[in-house]
Image (cartoon, rainbow, N blue to C red; front, side, top):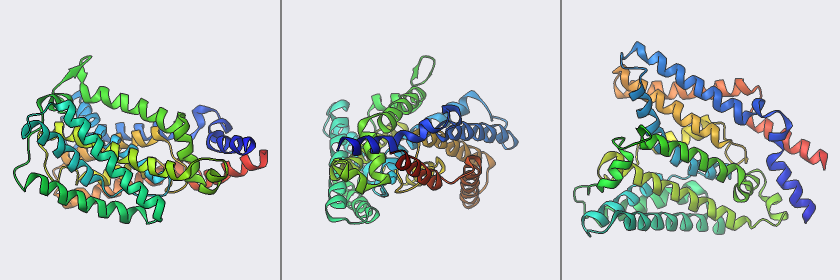
Length: 350
């Protein structure tokens, strides 16, 4: 059993030791994504004299924060071969819970946040249990759960006007609050990047998620509690959506039912552009984080063009496809081929 465990741990981390860190995909890919984002922002001056600017950069990082939190949870789910389509429902439920607790029930914001996060975790627990226990496709379970949550949110609010956000949450996530001379969301974005990296790439739990994604059979043979790991991924994913819902509540100022509708696709796109291969156990959080910045930058520049919404969607899709192609050419090999080579080298060395 000890030999098997050593093998699996090696398989998860061997790619980072095979080449120098400055040549590894986990370093090169985020740098390339950031360079592309800066280039897009500079090119935005063609459409708006206000680009680039410090205010635009802060706005981009602020909106990237929401995408990044969602992409963290979605990325973990996609690593193990799933897809969470309940994001809009969890966002709406989380935001509405906090807003109702503080406005209708006159409760304090902290308690409302804790209740919202507990509800989000419960949603993830139910999703994960149904998927792991009954082997139902994740997109079916989460899509159905999203519908349930939307209906539940409508029922809780009785279809009334969206309740307002607590002032403290507005101060934190609207961009009006400052810390160290910069907007609080910018500081939170940095913290999310650091915490997400250690959870996904450096923790024992994160390694188990990677291993489960690359080979559930190997996980089982090594003694990893695969069902618990799978369920926990959906719990963490739902918690990420719940946290994003609270942040978006502060950003928008009220708990609209459609608050999360426009954020699910950017989160999925950020994971894919970042190089994560669905169901492979291959992906880097730092790449996903920088792809959030790139996609948000693209959105800001598209908004500056003044094009109609239809053309904006077309341009957004084209740029995402180009980014995917550039990432593939930049590595010289597909992520799946890199994964296969990593497993082959590890098996050969053992």
